[in-house]
Image 1: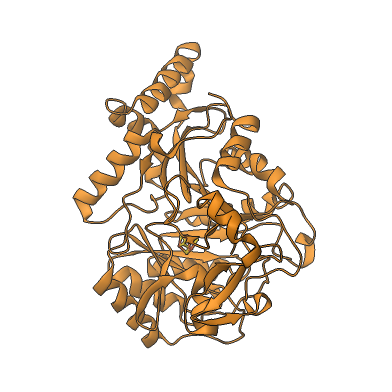
Image 2: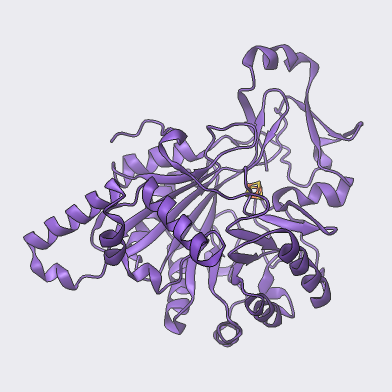
Amino acid sequence: MNSSAINHNDLYRFPWTLADNAISWLEPTSECNLKCDGCYRENVKGAHKSMDEMKGELDVFQAMRKSDCISIAGGDPLLYPDVIELVAEIKRRGWKPILNTNGKALTDDLLKDLKKAGLFGFTFHVDSGQGRPGKWQGMNEIELNDLRLHYATMVAQIGGIACSFNATIYQENLQYVPDMIKWAQDHIDIVQTMVFICFRHIVPDMPFKWMAGDKEVKRGDVLYHSDKNRIITIGSNELVAKAREEVDPDFLPSAYLNGTADPAAMKWLMTQRIGSKKRIHGYTGPKFAELAMSLYHLKTGRYLSYVSSDSSKHGRRAMLLFSFLDPHTRKALGKWFGSLLRNPLRLFERAYLQTIMFIQPVDFMANGDQSMCDGCPDITVYDGKLVWSCRMEELKDFGTFLNTVPVAAEEKAAEAGGGDTVSHKI
Ligand code: SF4
């Protein structure tokens, strides 16, 4: 396999929809203790919703949307005064509560209380664009691996809670993606998922007008804008190419979500590998993803989101069970047997499952269409309705989602281009 672009038709398309999805997104607070580059939420001190409001939003999810987990985000949800009660409420209603946090406010005592309340997992946002103060200031992604390890170790020590990391990927830290994927293998026993989210913003050279209904909005009034041009075109294919060039030429994505205006865009692109700290046996293929998703839905009535820290330890069992139908998993199994023949002591080496997810948010098409994730897992509740969390600020500030209209000089090019992507945002 080489580093050439992958084709979405070769992968399993996640079956997620607006009404039946793996994930839903809940924001109890807009307050944060960091100011990350690329954040799409206005940071407002003390802007906590009440528990009654939270219960109301959970009621909306219950009425309108099946999901396996609720991602509790913000702002930073650890600053929410009722975070323990909220986690317990989500658990009580039968969802997996996942906390999406920068980790700064996490203490051992809070961790114990969250576990008692039924927390299923963490997704820690750690990257070099967060402006972390103190000893982490100015550190690159490799140096920040110490901070990642700090959180992963805290979670592993208490046990029974899944541990994921996400990072926003800009031109500036793109070079470190392979190192982060390698770091994740070094800690495959305690890190279940790595998520890489491509940076999007509205930048000056985008050839659009921004419209709230028939009223034009200044680009600078949209929260997620930059005053200078920045690279905002990094996508899943580029990240796969980097992983293949610098981590493993066999790096194999298995499942994706397309764009609403571009079926070939891999807005969410999942790769799942099986192995140990010392060696990766191989990658699960599209059939594995389809079987896992379908069997879980048959059993629970929901599509699978995160797997537990315990299930991720059963890489060997997964290889044995799924090899019959998935040739890529069969290949991994063969590689594992081969390594056993070379050294039978490896029978005592545990095989883990680990997920690497690439997320490519909104793409802007030449004709002004905004291509969103089709079957968006990060749908949240605003004013009693289900909306894209990454664009909620538009509703708050302008009362509607903004339309993008190509500016006159570009209209001809857009017609000639027939809907090619010209730029991206958010
Ligand atoms: S549409 Fe926006 S909120 Fe939904 S999954 Fe994509 S980036 Fe996330």
